[in-house]
Length: 168
Length: 121
Image (cartoon, rainbow over all chains, first blue to last red; front, side, top):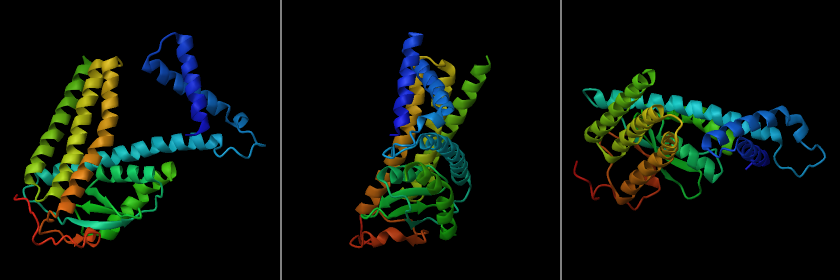
């Protein structure tokens, strides 16, 4: 967890204390205000002499911005996936060429693989089935296998790129 | 008044996706294809219904629980679909005849897919 997140939570709790209301709404509001304050002070917050700090403040803002970006990409893919499912299910004749492909993972961390596998399941025509022992290959079931290469590229260029930026 | 219209629209859309998901469960040829429709359409349906709940109840405690439920739905539904598909494959459930590739076969070579417990569908 980035150390600035702790600062941000402390600011949110302070806001709740000053408002004398401990509701979730107040906490979220306080968190947003705190985020704004920290962002305004971002140049002051980094201690240039202290090299031990593994995370600079910029990382916190960058990760937050990327997470929001990921959320919108994900939402877009989810809606596309659902429209496709509706189209397939309600078509008179089932036109499918299902199959399982092996997808080589770039993401290294466990959290990143989990997020990617979950996202793959909720995006158009793909379902993650299994992970190899060495955590390098993800087995993905696809409804349309006409072009396995293109499918792989589309995962690599959208979902995996964003997953990598957030969780490595 | 306005919020009521949105509530009804989201409810109807949610129900539509859940019905499509159930219909897909019936129409799809094998377990893996079935998991596609159930994991996507029913998650979307559930989330839309929860959004309708949130619009109707506003930022009250119950409405915020709807948001929490949306997050948990996104976290758990794909995991469930993944586990069912994985368990089915490890038990030796056959892929549909029209399937054109099976990269996973390399990982479980001992599963002879021809004389397996095939679920009658």
